[in-house]
Structure formats: C-alpha cells, structure tokens
Image (cartoon, rainbow, N blue to C red; front, side, top):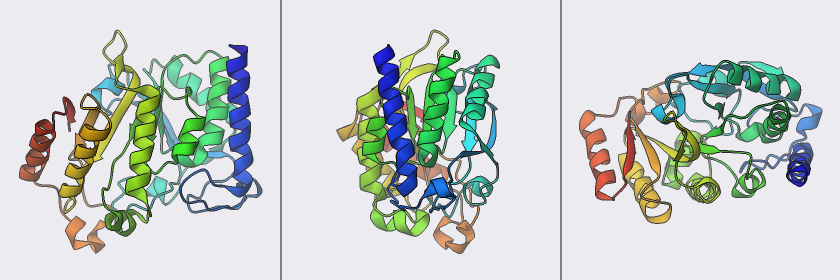
Length: 295
C-alpha cells in the first residue's frame, strides 16, 4: 500500500511539473501555467471551480437515490459552439481552489451522502485534481471517482492516472475531422477520442455495480445527438460495438438545444427530431449494443 501511494505521488509530481510547459491535453499549448500564463483552456496553477453539489439528474447508475457529487470545473480545452454551459466553459465563471480546499469539497460531498465524486470537465486540471484526491483519500474519502470529460484527452496522460479513476464518463461528439474543427475547434478529435476511450475501457472495463444499484466501476459513454450529425453518431456507435464492447453502457442523449453560438450555424439551430433519435437507437440495437440509456 505504501508503495502504491508513493508511486501515485511520483506520478502527480510529474504531472504538476508539466504545468510549466503545459502539454497535458492534445492542445500542447506549452505555456507556463505556474507563472499565471493561460493557454487555450484558460487554466492556471490552481483548479478553478464553478460549483459543486449533489446532482440528481445524471444517468441513473450515477445519481442513484442520493445524487452524484458533481464538481464543475471552469474553462475547457474545447470550443463547442452549442455549449449549454458556456458561461462556465468559455466565460470561466468560478473561483480558484487550493488543493486542500478541493480535497475538502470532495469530503463534504461524501459526507452529504453522494454516491460518487463526479469531476466535470477535469482534463485541464488533472494534476491539481488528483493531488487533491490523494489528500482526500488520506482523510477518508472512499466513494468512487467519476472522470466526466468531453473526450479530448491524451491517451498517454490517461495512462498516468490509472488506478485513480473508478468510472470514466466520456463524450463521443464527432466521428469526422471536419465537424470537430468546425464546431469545437478540436483538431484530431475523432482519432484522439477513440484512442482515449479504448484506454479508458482497458483500465476500468464494463460497469460493475454497488449493492444499491449504482455503478462502482466501469466505462459509460455519452453520445449527444447533434442535428445534421446523426450519421456521425451512428459511426461512433459502430466503433464502440466493433472496437470496445457490445456490453458497454451508452447514454444516447437527445437533450441538444441551440445554445451559445449555435444560431450562427443554420444546421445546428434546431432540435433533433424524434424520428432521427428513434432511428439511431434502432441502429444501436441492430449493432448488438445491449446497454443503452435513453435520455
């Protein structure tokens, strides 16, 4: 156990060192965040938190009866033109927390009965978050940790945090490069996202359950159906069936609504039709995907 703790300390030290020439996400901005220089994500030396609370509106296997302990981080390494939380992701609302303060937030959520700690948009604050997590674990944090990400994550960095995440909750937004660049300014997203999801699955596998009917470990993939990108959603479903597992849990989401800058893109300025949503669900079932969460 001591060896494991020391090993994780070494990894966190290594990740913290990389803030001085930041290459923690696919952006590779190479700015010195330790000297208050900000890259694409807007993140600095300390984690910036917009809010934290028990969330009862997540997927049932996360929210359970007592809620998922969500911590919403400010900023983002993507620029989704339809972002529903743009005041947090792009406006960067929130305040900076020390590692100790963030650890205390995690413990407070556990004390409030939450089933898990749900790290929302954590990619650009990985060193700070997992330093805080080690502190919280040392002070009695025992509930699972959820890594809730837009899916623009480096496989190599995910490998470093193996053993610290219990549940991965990534988005699969795009299957085609043109869409990723146009709507999220995320070059290379399809390939990077797929490699990341395969790595996540390697680490945690299919969902394992607590006695109360909530997940304690595993991969859950979110696919938000975006108008005009329905075929890309199908491509991503096919990728999961053929390259990950037909038993993986997939949240097929129809919550899209035109937000932020979506009205500047006529193809995005509408809701997804019920017919299109049903067609995608039917396609997923044809692929043999067994665990669909319909929202």
